[in-house]
Length: 220
Image (cartoon, rainbow, N blue to C red; front, side, top):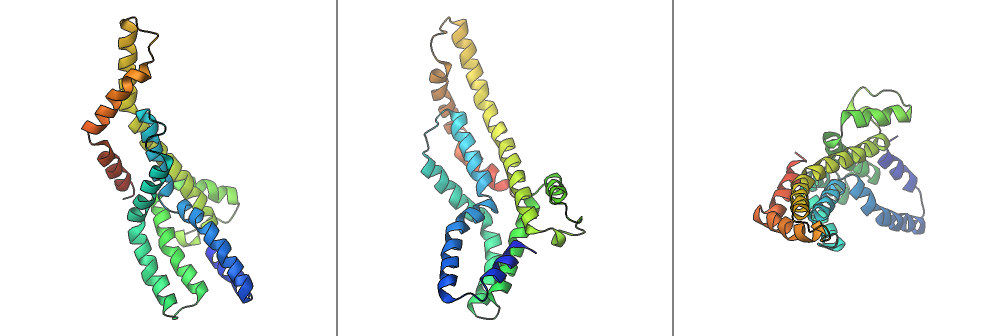
């Protein structure tokens, strides 16, 4: 049984006060769930790598990074959300389908997105860990198996991108450190000297443009 279908059956038949309590609980949990099944994780981690690679652990602030990640996630997920709106939200608002049917329909575009971003090895890992029958098609893969596989794949992709971001800044740190050592200025912290050069390099190559372009392109 998939998770969303189970949620629909759980709320069925409850009294109005209990439905309100369940709804408020879902509203509290929903942002975290949506972040877990969208590209938010990858985007936020990569932006964090950019900040650390530059050597500015507090610039941009966390609130700014989360805001950028949120709106980039909306941009990346716009086609998926549009399909969900067409096949689930609008029919439900027009009272042509039930709440459970709307939840099941809304789940399908998210599953399609997650399958495209999930590695086969990660999916196989959680299928084996679940001890369930080997699925023949993607439709047979339960959502509770797909979601953790998707998250692991997102973490791996984010760290791969982060490694590539670190390389040019690491070279600058090494050059500055070797230069200071050859000049006998070993008491001067290399990070203090390399920071302006890293910021200058990032500005000259239009770093934010390249990072955002690479992030959005990694989802296609």
